[in-house]
Length: 223
Image 1: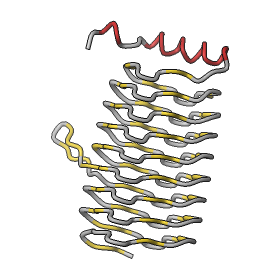
Image 2 (image 1 turned 120 degrees about the horizontal axis):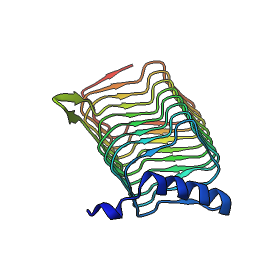
Image 3 (image 1 turned 180 degrees about the vertical axis):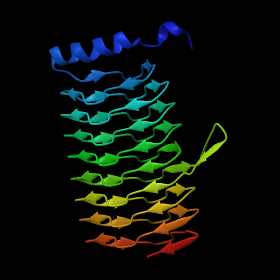
Image 4 (image 1 turned 90 degrees about the vertical axis):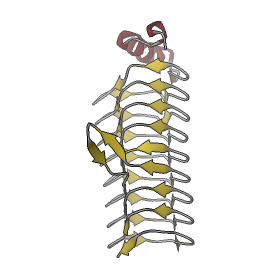
């Protein structure tokens, strides 16, 4: 890809600034970004990354997103980090292909989270995060990642997460472990046809609705 087609860091900042002035979405749809670092920033508009290519990491650590994120079909060549961030709307990462981990540890999301059809190399962590609506994790494929001779297991962590709605992992394939220790779910948890290559750990999980394990496979359940 020619370098002139990659947005510069200054062009990224200019789009964020102009979008705020014009009171419209921050529009990176279909664009190529070197990376995106918005730690501890307050973002008033929806962040649109649909179909975008991000050549390194997206970091939203401790950011306050007044609305949400639309990143359907994006390709991220690093990790997606949203630790301790706050989002006032929905987060749509459906169909995203990512070569690093996804981390929402201790994030607070007022809308829904959609990771349907995610293709990830490395872990997905929603540990200690809070979600006020549903979480969609259907047909994900989470694989181990091999970096500099190290193996990062393709684990999915929902340990101590608080979800007011339901959680759906139907049809997902997890190369590592699924950990829902001490999770609280106000609705249903669906693991229909979910394939977990290693352990399924569900100690002290609190699920107020139905717990669907129809055709779920795992090496061993630890409860």
